[in-house]
Length: 451
Image (tube, rainbow, N blue to C red):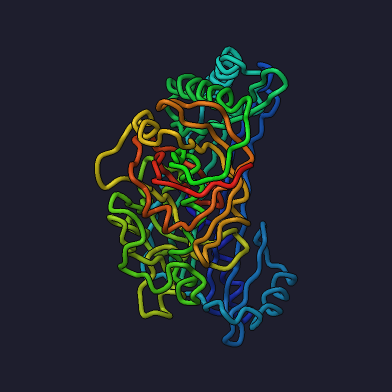
């Protein structure tokens, strides 16, 4: 397994930059490869595979930070001009740190998948979905596999290397009956090296998506009021993911987080636990270092409902006299280091419950299966939210009539404190490089605005 630090071309490039008068040199190298297979109507309609590489060149010019981006390293006067022109225009960026000790954390996550087995699994999943009651059309039946390798290399050719990657199925099914249409999506993690599980995983997801679409048919309006609520696992994962920036050091420092001033205080019920686990098999992201080269670690954000830990990168940690917590990540290759997370797991400090038990405990309430407007309707500054939602009435402890076009509103801390039961059915949601895993939860009540 070779690395960029063994590439003679990169070594010569670094020497060339040094000779142009730059110092404190560092390369950030992102290499990505992916495979996407999509089946529709039993035919393979998309087969994409590709590789990409991006270099971020960072240095100091006359004592000031500068950077340039390129997908091809070469001794180019244009690159030199770009570096010199950017000197001093990023006053908040730090001159690169030297790497104290070279380490290779890569695990070679890429495994050559049996593409015939994947396609066969997708075809069977589509058939199983369409065999379900009221299923009308499979909108998406897709396999996606990727690997990203990140390498940090300084002018002494000291290096840090890590990789991330995984394989997932996505199935989206539309149901139809008497002019009513509803759709639902399901996502599943698979091991690209274990082809025996492809068909089983894809077919299970397809059936679950078809069932969720079916129970969304014939939706009616909900009357306004306060109701006991069961929030489906994927929805709770979406809500939790949206409010993660409240735990970021820079937002607490600038008091743009609703958690400012709440360190080590009760922000949720005693059952609530939220932690970041970069090594957890439940999630899709697994890193050993962050994008600043700091080792990542498992850490508890909320324990028994108490806010325990703040997440820092080097810069935000330094402002408060703290070390980085290994959460310095780039939102994209060309961006500055921000704060980010790997896998975030919401779990229960006590006994978990089946979905049937959650529904029985929320008699007369609503089972929420979908929300919209999270970006605009959820404030990380105040914790308030107002979200368009849909789901089903809960009647006799069962999933009843579908309901839609109602709004749920409240405060995230109130929601966390009102959690009375936590399920045993964790599911995940990925967005912007973060994976959030959550089971379903039963909440004492939420305000609903309907007809």
